[in-house]
Image (cartoon, rainbow, N blue to C red; front, side, top):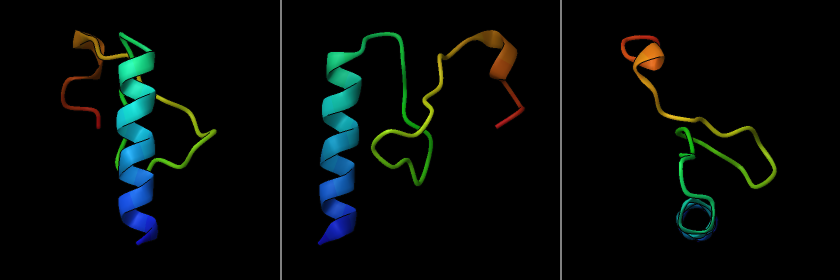
Length: 43
């Protein structure tokens, strides 16, 4: 159940913060990513 709650929180965060994405295993309060061509192949 905690995984589902975390996925919902991540989806809400992305919806409320355009231009940012949550990496895998993201936890509330953790760093997020700003997608760009610089990240291609590095994640």
